[in-house]
Length: 81
View 1 (cartoon, rainbow, N blue to C red):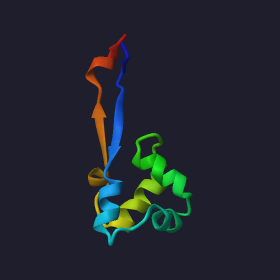
View 2 (view 1 turned 180 degrees about the vertical axis):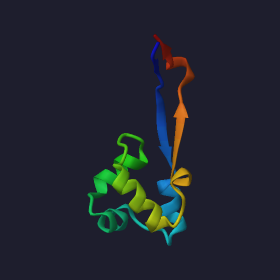
View 3 (view 1 turned 90 degrees about the horizontal axis):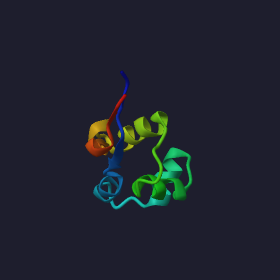
């Protein structure tokens, strides 16, 4: 029997940017060495960052990983085989 759990990763990046002196997406992208489009995609939930980028974000915003990113299980899509 195998259990496949599906979910969605949400984030608080936009909120954290504004709490940090209204940091722009471009400023954050430069600090991380990625493009502004990457930051926009992460904020929109269209892209999940690598672990390396996620941990760099925790350093930049001086906040724990679970305050930046949340995992929400979609119970209706959980399959038991």
